[in-house]
Length: 254
Picture 1 (cartoon, rainbow, N blue to C red):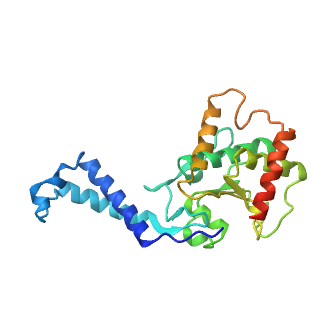
Picture 2: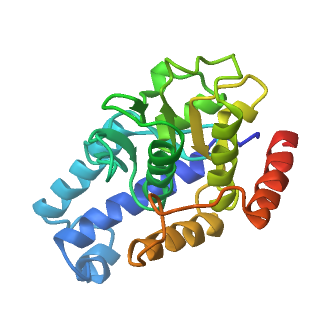
Picture 3: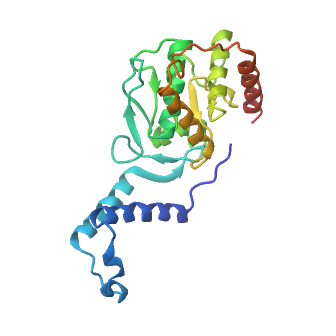
């Protein structure tokens, strides 16, 4: 999957949005922007507004890279420090410190981890690696998606990059069912040219409506008894198997 680099215009636009948000937070309505002094070209900016802008710009420099990972999401330099990537627990598992991009991405990746834990192999603390710093991943490769918080590696030591055949056939059936259940939003690294069977990543770009729809479906399952990760699933159901096999063919051909 080839994704263009973020343009300078995109980076500047993002900075403007962050700065504008900081100004609006300090001065709701930002009425001073339409004042005569502002229109005349002088600088009526109150000290508090300038400080808010300074903090927003400093945060932007500290956290954001302006560069996309393989799937088009922006890589971030740090986690848990004012960006989009934070440490979260995985309910129903011993995992308490998985770092992923908050929001819809988190909902989807946590679902993958939970089904893996319940149906493929029980996970222990430390078995899942989420965010990695941009300097520790290979740019342009699927593993770079970890630097944008949109990928996880499950037991990377057990499924070394570059090798395949790490899963039993029954486990692969469950794995394919998980991917089909998520409507192809997630790709398994085992299908890549250079396989990485530990890697699972969001394969749609930012703003893709399919991600929002899938995440909304998963959230809805949280309120329905017998639905979602941990509930009984017949992965050998004919409809589920057909859907899984069709998705496998598409993803392997991509």
